[in-house]
Image 1 (cartoon, one colour):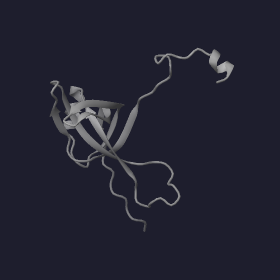
Image 2 (cartoon, one colour; image 1 turned 90 degrees about the vertical axis):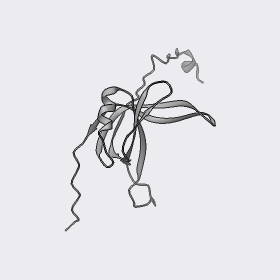
Image 3 (cartoon, one colour; image 1 turned 180 degrees about the vertical axis):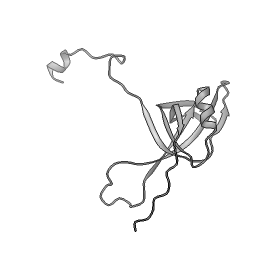
Image 4 (tube, one colour; image 1 turned 135 degrees about the horizontal axis):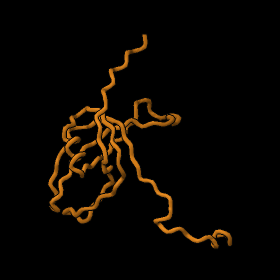
Length: 132
C-alpha cells in the first residue's frame, strides 16, 4: 500500500457507492407458486428464463444460452400480479438481488433470488419468419 493510499480515509459502507438493481425480461417457466412460511409471511415464487446477451465466445455452442432466475414476490401488489402469470408469459421484473437464509433438515441453507419490486406482463412477440 502506498503512503498516499494509506493517508486517504476509508469510506464507511454508508458512504460507498452501491447499486443493487435488477431488470430482467424473459419468459415465465412454470406457473408461479404461493407459499406460506413458518414466520407467517407469504411469498409468491416464480422462475424466469432469460436469454444471455453479449458476444459469443470463440468455439462456443451455437445454441442460445439462457439463465434461469428465481424471483420472490413479497409485497401484496406484486404478489397479486405475479399470481396471474402463466407458463410462457413474457414479463419484465425489476427489483434487487437478495440472499435468503433458512433452516433445512440438513442445516442452514441459502440461495440468491431477485426480490421483485414490479412484475409486468409484456406483449408477446410474434414468431420470426424464416428468411425468404
